[in-house]
Amino acid sequence: MKLLRNNDDLAVYLSSLSGAMGLVPTMGYLHPGHGALLKAARAQNQAVLMTIFVNPTQFNEADDFQSYPRDEARDLAMVESLGVDAVWMPEVDAIYPPGDTFCLHEKNHNTRMEGIHRPGHFYGVATVVLKLCLLAKPQRIYMGEKDYQQLQLVRDLVASFFLPIEVIEVPTQREVSGLAMSSRNVRLTKKQRKQAAKIYQALCEQPNVNATRQVLNDLGFRVDYVEEYQGRRYVAAWLGRVRLIDNVALDRR
Ligand code: PAF
Image (cartoon, rainbow, N blue to C red):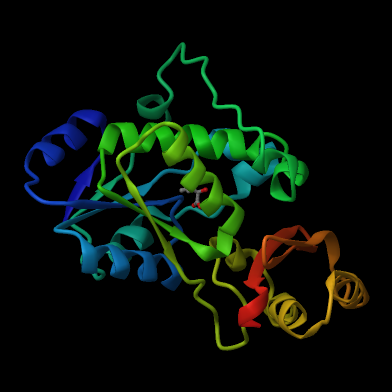
């Protein structure tokens, strides 16, 4: 496995490729959800490039950026065992060169759910995904259903900027309890982790948005939103200082 630290390393790696390459963008602190993205990428491409980059521009709160879990040694050991060809871990300057004053503005996703509750978040996501795609030039990019709004944002980004990239959607990986796998789960206590699984239960079992919100309120969550949009029910809720999101397709409940 090749470890690419800067854009020159990336260019050398890209020049060595002969077939299709699949890009798996991540912010690290890997878990089996990332493993599923890699597995899908492995099956469809000759080469798989994973990025690990905690993108500063998508955090709307400095505290969230500081406390986002990071463990390079753990991540590298994990990717080694998962059959990744190369891991690209750029420094911030490699993605946002000094003097870079650009940021993508998005007018649809930004006006609902995550877009409202995390102001500027999708601008940062769109900007970094565009930059990663322009630098790495993958044939396919792998996105998880867990961040379904983000997945749609990336689909629209690829269409708007005529990127010759196929966006591949990979199902949410869940713990036995139903809790959607997420890097942020590591910040939950054992008790909170058990409680967090109730989000999926509520999404699946409650008849409508109001009932879902009520159940989560009663269980002690601080709910940001429960919404249905284009055939999916979405929730974002806090347990203590940890913010959790999940969604299900209404016809798959
Ligand atoms: O989902 C994530 O981990 C991030 O939002 C992404 C897509 C890697 C962009 O930084």
